[in-house]
Image (cartoon, rainbow, N blue to C red; front, side, top):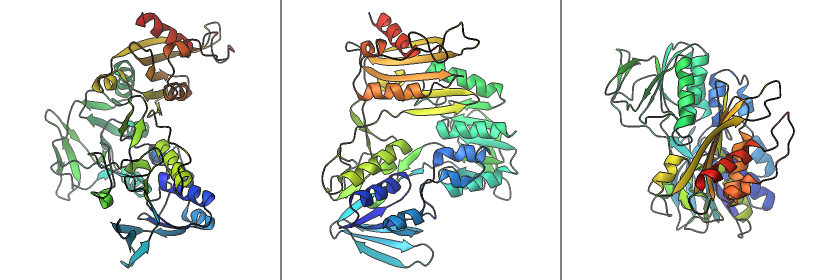
Length: 447
């Protein structure tokens, strides 16, 4: 069996390892356009901020490991064509320009995503950078040595983490986002207000509800100003973090996709062509809170889907369980966890939801210290089915997002969580765990 894997970051690496574990006699050929694999881009801000001293720790595999397992790994090879009728893949060696064409029985498309580059006047100016892969991280680090005024465009997780890294290193930082709140996909207003105040207190300039209309460069072509409809900001360096799009042009018109270009797959990671599998940022996920296919590019989704490719390559053995889009963040001492729907996203999906927000201590007041936990739970009206949750505290409550992710995935209700068995030990929690207390408060409000 000949298997060709196109792209080898998270989903591709997981797919190769699991294919060879389950099918050791398979002929696996890998094409990767970069000079590295398995880079944890979620660690870029830590690398840029100097928390991670050795970038080698941000890679959990390498071409040599995959080769030792039996794969033929072709680094710095760009796939230029996929002929799904003849089952052939053509790739170009970026170092020699030599083209290679190989046959496949099964094709695995794990081509990932690429940052969205908006059509803004002056965007071609020097020092306007993207933040996705290892090489881009190194460029950011190098240019940040001289930069004093940094503008980050985009208030999602990557943008916010970069803002923290630059603020901690003494830069003058401006954050611009077209929406009125930071982290709007993950958190509702009470939570973002706390974090926005923290950013302002740390000296960060927030320009929310603003879209960049122009970048202005000097005579050398280097960016000097960022212009919005109502303001302008000086800049030595700009980093664009406005989102990602799937890298799926090679299969356009050949398999079913969402309008965004994300490849549609069944529960076994097969596209509309049963011999073409897809996983990771190039692929849809089944979003359990709504029951719909959505595009949610996360490394966690990628590694799970990649593993399933290896399990289901020859026969349908293991179903995809879907996702809740669960995520965590650390920002200036605050720990933040979220999963599933927010109040805003529930409304956007036409879901009639109850939303309960409370604050309580994570452990008894008689202990020498404790910390407040700001919590929200989103549930379906009428059924009390749990659809989402958010947590924020100076105490590390991020694993609570994982707990609620399990609750959502398994269709649990407020009643289930209100009476869920959690241990009690004063060092760690209360006789009623704060998750019990949150669900009980939601039930009281739902009456």
